[in-house]
Length: 116
Ligand SMILES: [Zn+2]
Image (cartoon, rainbow, N blue to C red; front, side, top):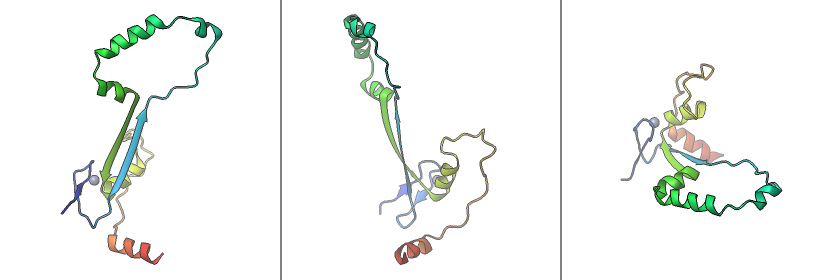
């Protein structure tokens, strides 16, 4: 039978257990460009040729990931709770709560979903 493993702690997530999916996109953000008349008048031919030449020697996957990359992770409940409190894994944040998780009853949760 198919099962998942938490991508943070490695715990096996059984099919009946809640599994959380984190999807992350990281991309190069360009601020709005201000184009002036001198930019339009400039000849970019050599600059573009040089850039293409550099890219020909680079790994295509690396080039693509430089601009855009998507991730998807499966998390157990414990890691989901920790992720919500500190999504960037910043340990230098003493203000974040560190308390233990309340117990979670999957059957009770599913019953409540069905009755709502
Ligand atoms: Zn986990």
